[in-house]
Image (cartoon, rainbow, N blue to C red; front, side):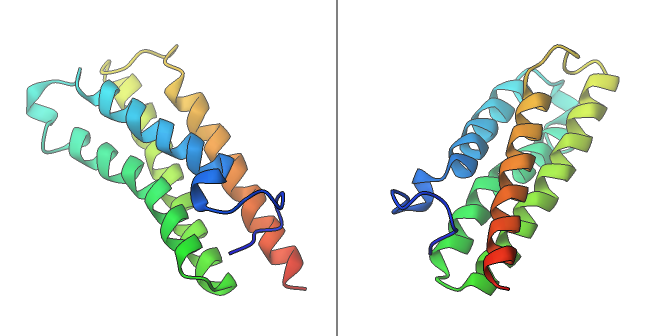
Amino acid sequence: MSSGQDAKIRSYQDLVAWQKAYELARRIYGLTKRFPEDERFGMTAQMRRAAVSIPSNIAEGWGRNSKNDYLRFLKIARGSTYELQTQIRLAIDFDYATPSDETLGLTGDVERLINGLIRSLEQNAR
């Protein structure tokens, strides 16, 4: 599925949005390893689900081979990004993570990239 990006994009793995989202998921797993044991089924599990959802939905939307489906899955990925941003802020407030953790900044990068893909697809639909 073409997204209006560079013609060298042959797979969802070539998308910078997917690459950054994948890295974000890896970082969230590392971050949550340091959370208290009693959060294993709470915040840890929720953050990991949200983080994994982001690159997964970018990939699934790409694979649907339909612009409308791609947009829908990108919007789901964006929603998961917002969810994860909220959870990271809570983790910082609960002293499970430090305010200097770069993970929150990476969520902002992912958000901007997904928004760019959505805008591109919506403009090409007009």
